[in-house]
Length: 88
Length: 435
Image (cartoon, rainbow over all chains, first blue to last red; front, side, top):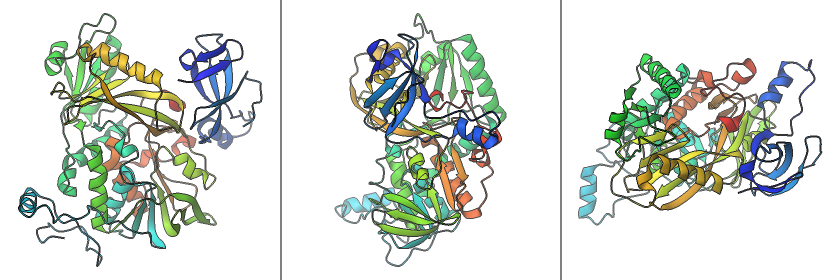
């Protein structure tokens, strides 16, 4: 069971949240071309280690959180809002 | 090899150990002589400096690829490199189910081909894999789900695959344990594929390892790949914990870790790694003789020959390389189990484990060349890799040997994502955690 410290609600069980995937990708400019968009939509770094990801707090404040979590140990190092830069 | 052997697939190299042909008669003879005549099922090979084909990953798909390369396509200069011992990865962690009840025509053809290979696998490998075509029964609980399943069954029958609709009463007759009248999710009926069933997964790994070894391939355990060598745009071998090994072709068959291997050559794949749990109960008297799936939640169960109920559910739902599951999903699986089969509420769970999956962006596997020449990828199996082992191995071997995709696996090319030809059985879109 992950315990995710929501900046607005405090530490809550993972069952209150919904996972929304990799948060490290940046949408290319509109004229970036097919290859850039294919890469954006489909390619994933999928690292074994620190992973930046989206979690939606559906059972709480309903805000979208950015979480830095380790994909092997499941340790959570940082949590912030969508605009925050959490590093890796 | 014993003289009783029927035309061996390939002449053995001098000095290569052979386990001989297995048969009831041999078992009887060995019984008379104290079981002293058995030898290792496959040779414990040490790596040579160079091979034509190096397969990374000694799981089901890697071993099957090596076997079909040697036995079907005549390429015996092959090594299979496995990080640990054979059988401890996903090939030994799944819930052992085989079936071909898909909707997408290309999927039906591919998985039906695999099911046909399962049907003759034991004779072909001369290994008892306990293939049991006990039937897979998918229950439905709403009218909309009936329509959806009917559509799938019709598609299967159009492709010559068996599928039949069962009424509530027929479901009850086949599986008396099922609670048809759950207040929230009553069972309206089911669809049965009688040729589906289970196979003993360890025996699949051992059988293919033995057959690949006998056919001439080197099965090398405790040899972890730490790097992939390249010369210009071409692959030239691998770095391992037991030294460098040169190769014309390197095939990755490491589902769960495909991204990590691809990253060694700077390649990003349309894959995320997720953990899937499985469970086994204490042994019971025979209570369930089909593979049963629940339609109102993600839950499937069969009874092993030892009596344990083998069951599982959905992936935990977020990227994970940990070969262990977490409790929320265990609770959800248990809740589904007792909703569908309330009579089993007091059965105790004996063991629980996790395996890491390549969850691909469209829910379908990848058998393909890659941008690096000579590097072949067999991966992206999501949670459906086990049933596909024979077809996955054979079509990957075809791609390696003939330098072009097997007609039944051409839709699994990596370039389908850029080309907009994704094979999305569920229609869930590019969200691996949703497939």
